[in-house]
Length: 260
Image (tube, rainbow, N blue to C red):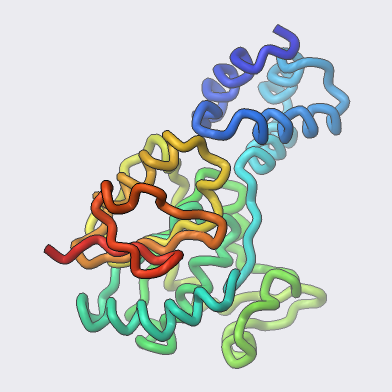
């Protein structure tokens, strides 16, 4: 049992409701083994005992497991496409009250980027972003809205000046931007998805999932979109069988649910 990965997967699910079967085993096992070695614990069974009794180690484990790598305006060329083509088209199609979901939002960089990018097209008070993540720690960090210089390096200069305040070595995002985002803890693999979304943004998360889990999530996203709605994925991802699922591929990172 000491290094039985099947035992670990079941124990982790019982503790966290995170299903490791949905993640690529080789990558995830390597990550977990590295963390256990760092904590100087011998064997999976002993590590599970530690997680049950030490809240800080448990929080560290969940945070490590959920792979939070994020930054504002990640891959700027894709955000330019969103700004020039996708937002105007969605506003023309659905009006000003867009329903936008940032799935696996991590530390808030993405939903806050969406608010700032959309503010060039709509008044701030008309913007609402629904943002979810499996990790409640990163959601709390997102709600705080404090970022380092590297995280906000991609933010256009005018928006940086308008929406951030320097606090020591960090940058605080404005309350008016924070107010446009509703954060909630949710698991893409087991929780109910919102419906009637005009835009779903889920980027650079599913690369860690198995092909079966990816397909399941992309199918659920399709059902979650309103006809004419758009899914925006990451630069390291693609929906191989998008036609079978019903998507129209707009370009490499944007997939549309047909209007009819």
